[in-house]
Image (cartoon, rainbow, N blue to C red; front, side, top):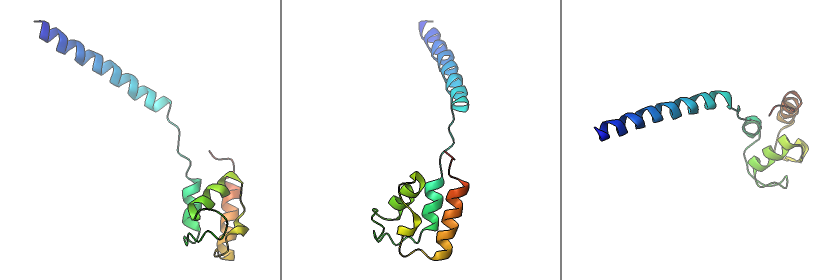
Amino acid sequence: MAIVKAVLLMLILGGVIGMFLGIAGEKLYVAPDTREEDILAMLPGYNCGGCGNPGCSGMAAKLVSGESTIEQCKPCKADMKEKIRQYLAEHSGNA
């Protein structure tokens, strides 16, 4: 009889904790910031380091944070630079 009580207690406790975690996951959800990945997809992808950053991912991170400008990317074509500038202007405050 003691084993049945223990199993029942664990099932109830697991259900309550699971429900709490499910509700907390919905209420405390934070949408991920995809700006770095979006800009990284627009960069040429040569990872040359000519901009002074450790590859294109470093350049994308610094562009999002405002520590760098797209003009530092030498291999990036003018039309893509303009596209990146527009993207940053439209998505500057998104977190």
